[in-house]
Image (cartoon, rainbow, N blue to C red; front, side):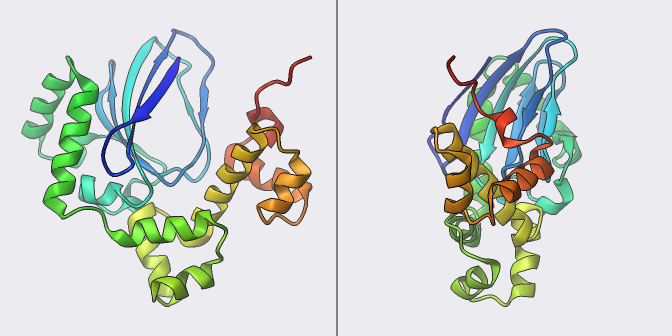
Length: 231
């Protein structure tokens, strides 16, 4: 069972998930985001930006509450470059003072969503907000702009853009562009757009190119990620 809703600040999203013991793992697709998590078994954690799909669950019953920070926002909250968290799930205590995390964990047992949002808002305020470059780069790449055009639009040379992207998103602009394009393609496909048309609209060479890219990033072809069609 999975639900999500707007967190009410910085385009962040609060989500909840409950998994039964022994349930099949859930495939979490890469999205360029960092998440602040509370787990009924693991306490407070940070999920870094993934390059490929992450399989969650498959073990004992567990309840999750998460705060998904939009691409480029995580470093301002956690105080570390996103690349240091890439493809990792780490205890929050590895990043922040243990005493502070222990107090947060105690409060989160009762109202995890409120605590996650409260601490993220406070950290963002203390940092002066997220780096505005993150939203500009993510918006340009989401709209299909190339890396060179994005660098020109932001006033950075390609090497500087690559360095800033690793800090903000955990990987360079080419990888982020592939991930955002995959998510844009899947959104169209889930709205019943034929895959050949999806490929053309999202800038893939053809449907086979779309299938290869989704398989590389998600571990399965796009058809495996779409809801079953009515018989």
